[in-house]
Length: 236
Image (tube, rainbow, N blue to C red; front, side, top):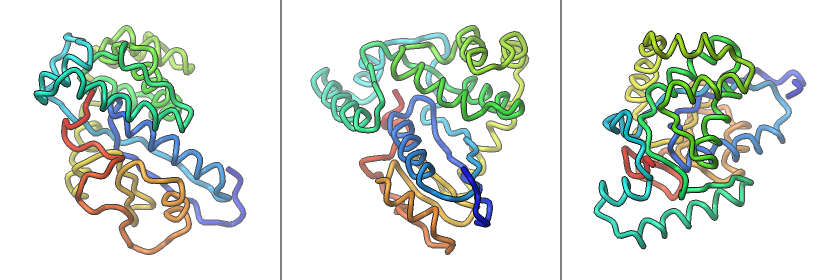
């Protein structure tokens, strides 16, 4: 984005790879940024909706969600249909029939690896598309390294970083900062460490947040909205 003397803005976004509203919120923010005449940097911060998700057990998300929440197959399909339709309005294609559960810790570590190599935004997009559209196992190190390579990163270096436990501290620091801010649901957007937007709000809210410089908290009511995931309520 070209600058016109406007102060450089930093936007930090807490989100999870498997959060359907996070991908929708990402698109809405991007639409607002495309219409904003100023210099902006976006950093993707780690948040795990359900850190207890088993590693190495990529079950169908419908099966996992029904078991966790005690929902019927019809209820689960209704939830999927609702969010899929909203995602489609943002140009996103969700295929919950292919999606598999995943512990996202290593995907978040990969995002910090990508940040260190100047590709975080690209990797974030690739991970979410792989999960929601392609049914990729975003907990598998080989899959993660392959996705990183598609964005121009070194697959061998990415796989070595994952195998060695690199960037786990950075993930924990993001999660600790979220707790310090009182973030209990994602997506959560922090503008210049001064202003917060909770949930996948309408485009107009993001446009207002970009313009506003006060400490007012927009949408951070502490209650779950239609565009927010809290804890494991929609960790799919």
